Length: 341
Image (cartoon, rainbow, N blue to C red; front, side, top):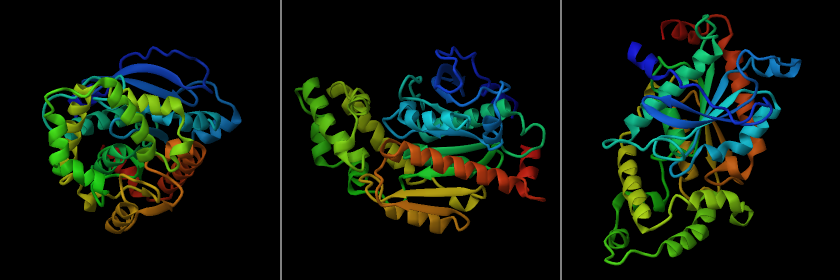
């Protein structure tokens, strides 16, 4: 436990913006990985108006992105949370955005350690957990981030007040995810081409494919968001490496979950226009975790934080407020778990 707490100690953040109503950008270290942190809402210990004082009674929000994404996917949601005075952070997961690269070996255990360090740091920042007020962090994740949220919820010693899992893979995936897992002949041929595919062609294909995979309505995709995704595939070599990494990750998802161990409040979000993770995955997850709640939105795609950031921000705010109310019911078991964490 001592080593884990030491890993969670952040580096001093070098914020680029100081206005609490804006998104502040800094860099910290979690579980040995240096990463970028986007932070919204009032600063801990800072002056707050009445509206902000009310909002911050709810748990702090930690937002995790999906595979081949970054914390920037949450900028629209963070802006809405900041306007409501709700404290939240989004981080680049190791291997993505501006975070340090993943180390050799299994991927999920590295991301688990990183996630746990972020949660402990945010709980310590809030301070209420140490004073016996119960866990003070709600974790919300999309896609791979949704998987990490479920895996964190399997460990009752983490300071979690609740988890929102959005389109988590590994339960009932689309044909595309299953194709990557099997690594069929066309993908093997692509990786073995004697002449690399030109970078401009790779990027051109990515610009056409990304909006169709991630958005409910590809025509509504913003150019800057699409560009952010396509920059992850600058050339043939990078694309091949990402493909191999995705294949490893999909393989690890086969043994990713121990859902019977989840006791924390859980909201499962399934998206009707998701082309990567079938809505059936959300229904199955809801069935396997009986105390969970299910939200199925037929009009959302794989990344609803891009489709409808206002609705996602409101959803997270309501869930966090409800988790806070549940915690403070007399005799709620979360208070006991926090005391022994």
